[in-house]
Image (cartoon, rainbow, N blue to C red; front, side, top):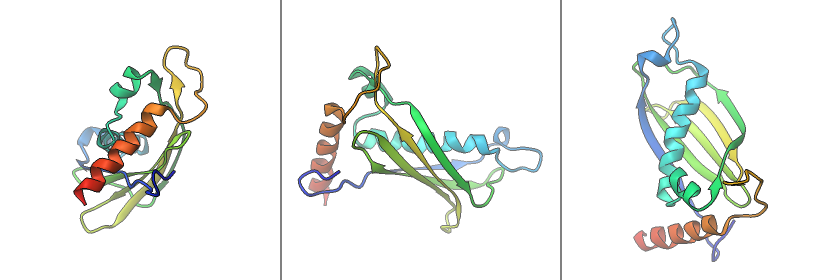
Length: 149
């Protein structure tokens, strides 16, 4: 969605060293742990737009994940340093975030996406539309980021 002709570019990134408790006997990270790595990058992304999970709840919404996709290109291993990137690709009606896991040389290990939908916090009913609070946070983000460029 555009705001004043601008399509926002919202990204979050974290570095993770694969801990021992995340790996199997072959020293490969179990596939389920990748989703917690995505969550770390997603939290950075949401903080950048000023709409983290606490703020979502405070403003009357919860955003459960309703769909995920992951492509495990190469395994990550114990003690490996990785970069987890999250990019917001859709925010109208739902949040779609794309992820990549790479190493310092840019070698890709994983591609993934998550889709989240807004529910009214108290009733847990689906909110149809884009919550005004999210649209305002995106406008604020564009104004803030535009001023830096």
